[in-house]
Length: 70
Image (cartoon, rainbow, N blue to C red; front, side, top):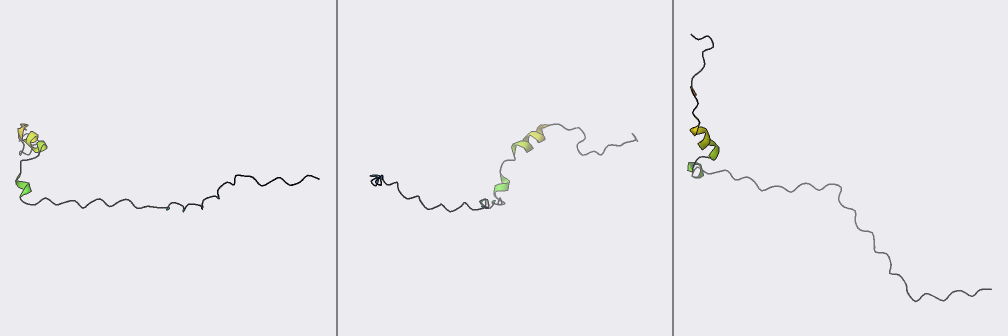
């Protein structure tokens, strides 16, 4: 006959309850609405792209080519 072992001095803590599962789908954050420029802001200096295009000399910019040389 073997007597039962004495109770252990250390008892491990109880397991924590299971965490809630993450949501299956999280919609993306809504970006702030774009602000429409007012009429006063359109009077500002032209964009860099427009300033560059104005400096490029384009021959016959508003001329429709004559395909038959008439």
